[in-house]
Amino acid sequence: MILAVIAAGAVAGCLGSLLGIGGGVFLVPFLNAGLGLQFKTAAAVSLMTVIATSSAVSAHTAGRQLINLRLGMLLEIASTAGGLMAGIAILSRTELLLVVLGGLFAVVTLSGIIQTGWFKYTRRRTGTGQRVFKMSPIHHHFELSGWQEITIIVRFWIIAGLAVAFGTGLFYAEFIGHG
Image 1 (tube, one colour):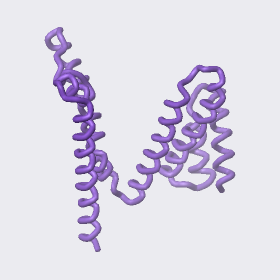
Image 2 (image 1 turned 135 degrees about the horizontal axis):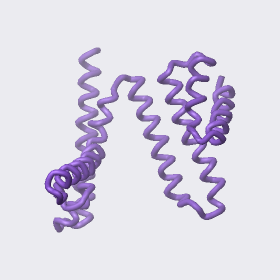
Image 3 (image 1 turned 90 degrees about the vertical axis):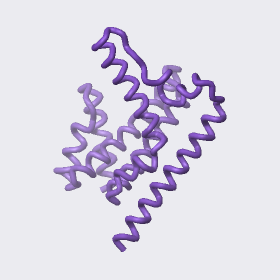
């Protein structure tokens, strides 16, 4: 089964690159219909093979100095960890808990969304875009407000720790409640 998935991923990647479309177009139906995997599982496997494919392409093009290999590897590791965390959360039906556990990341992401959305809205309405924060993401706002970088880092660590503690408490309370 594992060899079939690997082979299907390679074939789907080749077909996708030849046709200029994503290999998931071929891989997901094959895993679903051919191997009998549920659609969600097939889609998740397809996404994880994208990471493997991009790693291979990165290694091939690294010799030509066309990419930032360190950044690429960091993003691949983060993508893999995020994919695994999301998969575990889906299997354990705790998807919303990830937002609480990653509360700081959610706030930083929301600050960028709010800044961009408000700027575009006010630019359409008044002709001049206005900002909610001095700069986005929010940690740059605090830098421009005069906070030292180490102060921002330590406070964000504390906030992240509190978010994880709160999320763990929620998970434990749910676990105890359902015995």
